[in-house]
Image 1 (cartoon, one colour):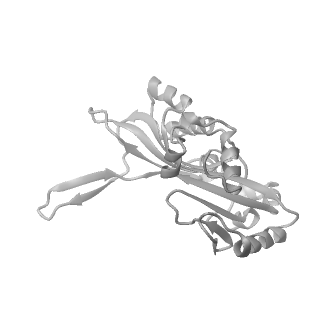
Image 2 (image 1 turned 135 degrees about the horizontal axis):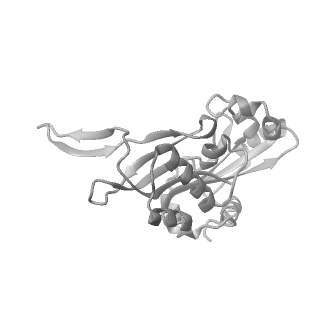
Image 3 (image 1 turned 30 degrees about the vertical axis):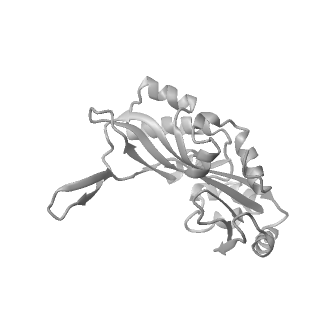
Length: 246
């Protein structure tokens, strides 16, 4: 499933009122100013961030720089979701514009539907069912000691195993989804904790691939239009198996 997206989404609008970060020279003149990110709350208090980007020469921004988890934004959790990045981002875009009271132009809407925009980061993950949560934790301990990628040996922190954690191109990580949903930072909303979802997650091993801008560019996958719903699993399996060019 698609777990995180950072992208420049076409949306002609007057810049969002989110404040500015500025640099002022010693003589008091303004060297540069950049709009701040605005936090937007979606389903079950799940949040993403956006900021205005670009200019049409008439005081309006041309894009929204989106960064966040579209599945969480739409449904309040990321236990499962969609592999169709274009459909996922189209629905997210419409929800986002409604919340922000933005009215995209017809060309903007056509561009979103067609995937005519650039991605700067995409996270893809899948869950694997083991017999028990204890088996998941044992798998993680073994992976920490025995596994290796082109990044070399993994590192571990807080129960998560990382391969290439600080890479500017791509990285992998693995963790217990059953443990994560009880952690303060990632805890499921109370209303969802009362559903069968926690039991479903309890014995799941989650493995996540992050592709950053340089890697997306080298793979010719920066344009969302190049993605279909089969590509995420192909990419994921390729990196897990050690094939990193497609």
